[in-house]
Length: 91
Image (cartoon, rainbow, N blue to C red; front, top):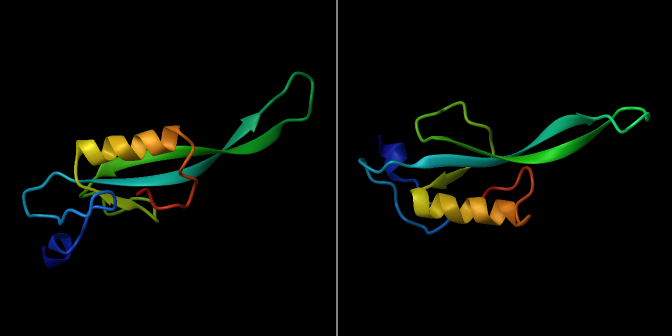
């Protein structure tokens, strides 16, 4: 429990409390096959915003600690705007 209480939100800096409902968020790259018309199939790396429950200990790393829906919305907006790339910690 002491570890959880020492965490802070990567977006606003709020400290984790025992009763907060926090999220984890990561930007990962997914290799997706692309088959252009009549050409040799290629692959490209597509970024994905992955959001999970705070209690998910097997969450992809690196990841951010997000204190709630408002900060999660800020991360989603930055991701949609192309500001966050795979491997970066959302902020």
